[in-house]
Image 1 (cartoon, rainbow, N blue to C red):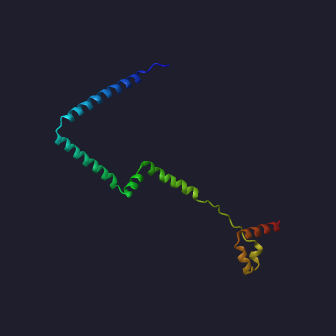
Image 2: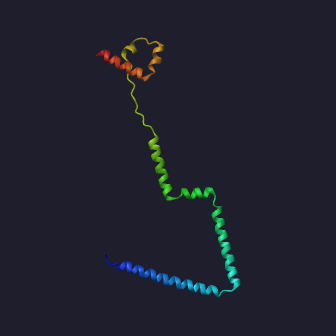
Image 3: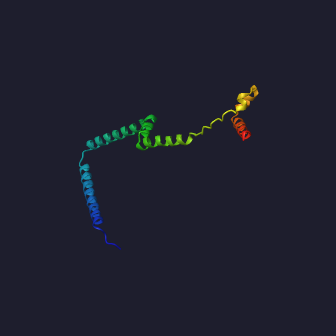
Length: 139
């Protein structure tokens, strides 16, 4: 077992001295309170009651808006809330890759195409299939 260090001995001595000072102050205050007149004691009690009443009224008068305002001005909220929103927005945004539309086959551009065929060309998969078939036919 290691012997106590000088710091721990100093702390223990400081704590015991502090307790001695506190106890002597408490005794002096108690002794002086005993010497006060009854009117002075009643005045002190009334002032104390008024102070406690004002303290309770101030705490109860805080509105919901003031509470929210105090909460929003806390440093952890002012820094953390925008960062959290940025992360949520970054996650929720869907990134879509732009697909290039293949060129129309030459045979369709040269010949006349009926209107029904244009409705089918709106479907991108059909256009891709048609372009692939045109390329495979040329091979």
